[in-house]
Image 1 (cartoon, one colour):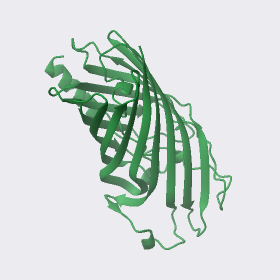
Image 2 (cartoon, helix red, strand yellow):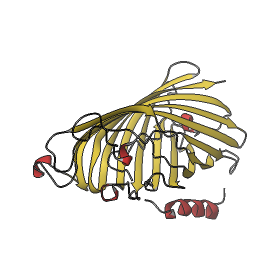
Image 3 (cartoon, rainbow, N blue to C red):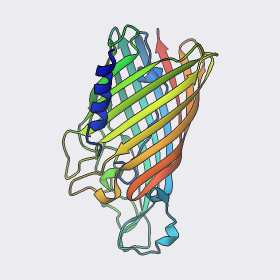
Length: 317
């Protein structure tokens, strides 16, 4: 692929309006197992199952952690206590010639506790339901090695956005839209990636993926986002492959009358060490721990102190 074209594509991604992790929906930026995401040159079908655990228990404002003791109750604004997220995602990837497709189907299990405005008692919610599916197509015929690709697709409104509190003074009232399993919107996805060997023992990848809502739903439009990831892996022993990623996510504020715009949006940069283990001719197991390097949020938001991800990939040959 010629270098001027590559530079234009990368610039176009970064110039897209980058608008949230809404209160507690920052999610996981990890690129998971490389082959499961289509970063492979061979044709065929791959199935992946992945589990992510995020305990958002740290209250932050700007780039600093905040002591809850600085906010004696009651307050004239909502004060979140904690959110525990468990994502189970099924992934299906198919490569053929210069093209590939990747489908991600998440199940979201989320518990949330918060002190409502002017209240000293907690309100709590728990939801377990399908989240928003993502369908990504890729064109990987830009180089003879098929190691540079363009991604395009949609995030689909398959997740619920009508979950309510189950206890406390807000029982029966709708949960904040940024905490719902789904956004209710259809989002455009555009990306670019490159991967390959650095030398005999080391491989690398780099990826950028932008997401922008094409519509709004019931007074809510999620902020646009940009994920950028780079990674290295040591491949001297194909049975056990150590990996290291740096993951970044930039998100603008949510918008709409039903959004919490003041407390949404920001920037996350994480370090993610992990390992992939060969468990048979077709099966690979993998695990990562994602550790924040730098976090900046708008307003007052919850952020994770760490994220744990484990998964398995099966290649059909």
